[in-house]
Length: 379
Image (cartoon, rainbow, N blue to C red; front, side, top):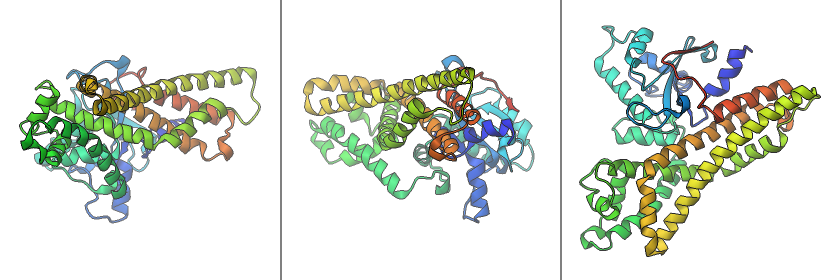
């Protein structure tokens, strides 16, 4: 296996909330002769892989969005995406120029409406902190865009559980905001629907006034509030796997064969750095989850807690992105760990494979040191 293949495979494989491997999923659907197997209108777009990645030194994008970019990775060989390829961030000002280089977007055979449709999809996904199937499906659906359910890998049972969890979090606060207005009491369910959509400013005006949200930020706050609830759900649901990964990294990430003192120290340094980065992201998510639950419970039980909780919600967009970034990094790291280490008995690996895995975990859990470029060649 080539070094390039070794590095790219765990970084590009489907299964992580930081990666959307459209190439892999579209090829499987076409092979299985599934009805409506395509995600995009432009055929060549199905070869790409979307990756959420931290920007250089945490720099914010030109539109002021948080320091998480969506990178499009275009493999040289769609039959084997691990041979290398080109990449470009969606917010790059030369995006269309680079896409035209790759695909000939100005060709006579390409319908302008198809291109606009696909660019809209990419823009919607760029506005998400991570590429969780539920978030992707929900965001596209709210914009009137449908795609084959197999792209999102979210079962009906799972989707229903997430919906119920989030709506259950909304309901007490909506009822509290409506209790002084008789005309709103019977509209609680409808108002929850409107919060979910986060698009109808007029319909949400009673809640905006009750919660004292800034008019120009209100819809973003409602959308981020839903996102925080989703990440809270995911955080608690994935607890067991996350803890297994954390305990392995802390206690068992050691070579199964004898190594020199120098190599042993090198492995220890790699493990220490990975543990520190995992702990940093874990603590960040845990702190938000605990703060949210504490303030939420106080809002419901103590009149003096209303102001603190609403203050939390006013910061919800920043919290939503930070929570999504840290949780998706943990998710991606755990995915790489499971994919690589599960091939070995009790996950005990020889030194070379352990170093390879620890190096990948450092990269996934870090990210801010990576150089941001318009078109990166991974070779």
